[in-house]
Image (cartoon, rainbow, N blue to C red; front, side, top):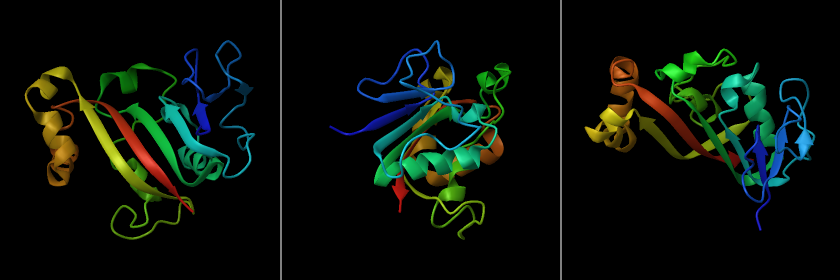
Length: 178
């Protein structure tokens, strides 16, 4: 069975996973503050690391992703789910420190954001899949399909339309490159 780490598991830990959270009233197996120190796990120890609605609370998102990368085995899966910056819920929660768009993880890709590597981090990821969910009206009208199946349309949507045709949630399915 794969070893799964559920970071910020809250009260509903992913079935079969080791849960980690900073709050004791959660389903966490391990209590740790993601912003205070390295995660209390060995390098390359998990097949999958999940962070569902957690990264937007991070004081240092680069360090957070680096720690996910460190504890994932080579080729391991990193699943990051976060609100899209155009969703009202991104700004409604006073504990959210980040408001990300679909290009946010490209700083960890081999080709970087503009086709070149970046110096912010040595951690490298490969995008397995990116899925953006839109508000239901836009999904019903077919915008969600276009955003998820055309890189050109997604770029146009991010640059010009996303605060009119509002996003809801982004699901980054990434691979740890080591």
